[in-house]
Length: 169
Length: 185
Image 1 (cartoon, rainbow over the protein chains, first blue to last red):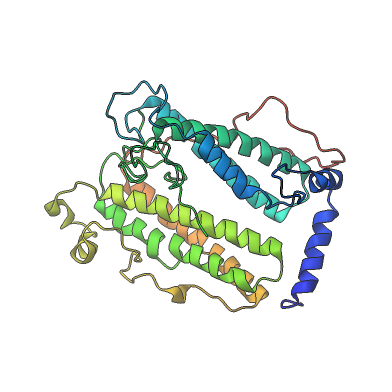
Image 2: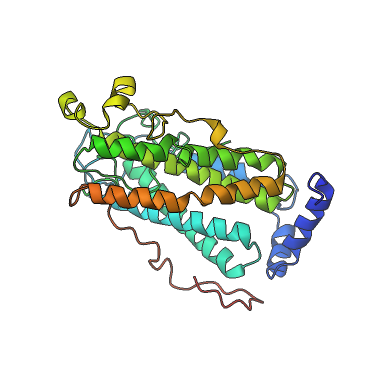
């Protein structure tokens, strides 16, 4: 079985990854310079945090919540807002699709079609999640848009019937 | 490391509270085949897996099970929300209510608090994956429970909006250079 032979497992793992149908594409990404100035070429984890921080600063607008069309002084994660409801539904659909595609890719890592589908979904999810965070409140603790107010802990929480997506607005 | 997202995997909006139903669904939270047992099973079996692919799969499934746990807990919460005490005392929910009121406590329908004895972690990939298969085998029994629950609910006490996962995502789909797969998404 070689279950504790990590080297064996790792080589097998690498071999499997390299033998796939996307070999050329992978070579391209390996030699690509991601432009962060550290001189390293792109590995899969390289630059992951950098992207996150950049995004955080880019969208850090002090108190502009965007034109939601909701009442003033409404709580974040706006409970009665149709747009938030729609965005949350889209996000849930996208996250569900991503989750299933990820599980598929775990089993069939060499399927290019699934990988393309995955990247499309992730791209769209990023946009929808950004729109939701701007208009409806933070999705995770790192997503507090406002610099004045702490919206992360504000009600409602997802198990409440009034949380966007649960109830038709 | 996990990052919490302030959302449910699937929307939960229950119109009418139903403590009798909650006393059965609570088994899906803390019962032997509940979501808590499932997530702990996968997440703790990861460490002895020889292959990154299997570790990745167990990580993803275990994390998703935590999302399921939150969804089912939301169902319990909403089924027992804002309900008068005398409405509870005539139902099978009464013993649970005595101990936990309307808090969501991981317990089985028969009243046994969640126990990691339900979970097998042996450090042997074959043994652990077989244990996962056995846990999956619990699904038919869960289906029976769900069917019975469906009969117990009247009309439209569940208001779960339909969710389509197959809506078109983008106009063009990128083609794989050397793909020969006929797999359709």
